[in-house]
Length: 292
Image 1 (cartoon, helix red, strand yellow):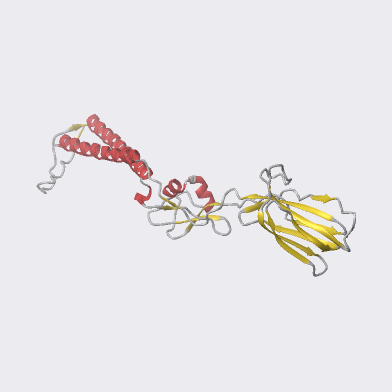
Image 2: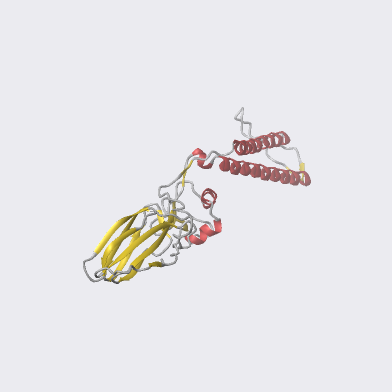
């Protein structure tokens, strides 16, 4: 049994194909088909690898990638653009493909609509754990009591270890706003802490008071910053409040990724693409010569 195949088109002369009457055996024809399919598969693998390496080396073809910023509810969204696919979004944003499908209820084909939003994740703001309540340090009352007054002193210290207790090398903080307010009445005393010196209010009338402290802007509290105190005539009371500097400041604006990628990865990707094109050209020449 033999199969006769058509002759190839002559691209240079523009002449219509002429039937080649030379017979080919069935085994020879099947071998050629198998060889051509294998070569096509290798070319496709090389070109896909080249595209992956090039995309990794030069993301978004040299354009800057904007890092999505969580909205007020903590949701992180991505706006779908032209030529986007689930695979490119997964690689660019660093999210697992299956997770992307589950978060957005996408179908198996991962159908996307340009201009709509994709949920990439949710950011949960950590809730600070309140430290221990301040422990008032009683001071021995003076022998002669005040005439219906007591003294209240406040000490705002830098709590470096965060245990809420004044340590040997933990010093006072300047600029903390202190308020001593009577619960029933109009007596109100305010002031600012002055480092290692106590902030004292020497003539506080008897009664129930609420003492509150606001640390400076770059400090976070390590103790409860409100304390209820009953003042009696002749009392001399000191209350300690702990605070420490913020460990880091959050940046709200979107960061633009300008990190340069390795040129070696770009060279490897380009080389693979070039190799695939060369093999495809050789394959076409061999196929044309075989059919002549």
